Length: 227
Length: 230
Image 1 (tube, rainbow over the protein chains, first blue to last red):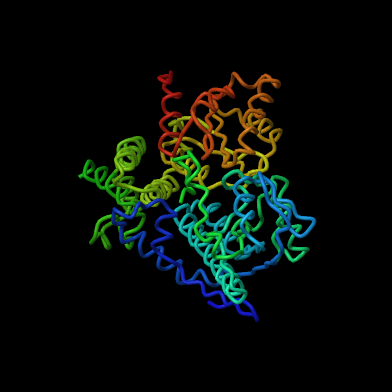
Image 2: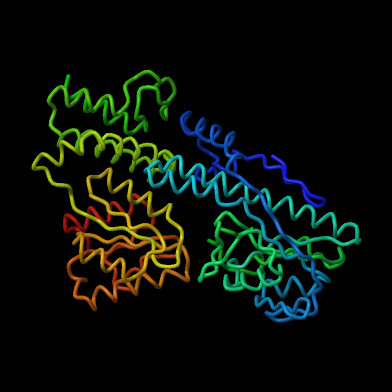
């Protein structure tokens, strides 16, 4: 499936291995024929339920130090992990992607009908799909950075590491209204839930931002997001 | 042979097979009767509903639980088995209601206010139903007051609360506090769960039990039912 405009083409090819990981398989054990064919069936038909949308802006990093970074005069990110990255970046891409509401409406209906296996598989396919959209946008940001002789960092999102989920509001503020139908709840969860917001640092390859990995300095060994 | 049917029901639960056309955990199962056909056969053979449930369905789920604990089964396998039990219970429910056999108890489950995550809660619900409990699922993002009102009206034996966020897990404490203020706390046992929740957190807010996963939640409810929980 493709979504194209003059900037990004999103090709969503569901990764069965990743879906298996999301639903709890550890990769060392085989799965039953029933569950394997269920994943194949849903993966084949899920594109009817996926409506990939994205929005991103690239802004200048004014300054970053300690646990604070100022972007473009009015955007303040409060996080040591983010500030340590942006300290070495000249610009930052702020992005938001979603696959829309249809897949999760279908998942909810399956769950209401107590078809939890099907709901769980479809939910995992949605998780993989939205990651694919974010990856495509990130690839485009990498291309843009490349034309300026710059490189990009990994993606970071509010709610991970020390970056408070409340900072979602700052991400949405930065997108100046182009929030592609995604809204925030009082607790800063995104609706549709199959949405990803975050930042990607842009800077010189001399600053080694491609390899910036805050996990190296973090003792939380059991963190599910550990890289 | 009646006992054979019970064994086959147990095996169809382990295989997660509802109908004869379903594939199972093992190869070559298609065409053999699934749990719904077997339950119909058992009823036609005048086997007791109680033995179908306890020996066949619950017996099968106990083995599934052991396989899950041992790392042989994963969440989807467990869900396939739980769905098989649920399909069998749909057939048995009208007869159960007409008989004097009681369910093991009623449990209200809810994901607390401001939290939209419900897959974990739904998994626990399906396992509890499969084990013979009546489950009333309030849904997700449920107001503290609405949970307390449901406890007052439904008078369940258990309340299961779920939260996936560190920012919302504190709502569980709010629910317990409001139940206390309304004089309802002593009437129910409260189980909590969700990714950021721990045994220590459960104790700190005054919950009666904590389930790290669906089977643990079920085990805690079973232990509290039989009064063996410390």
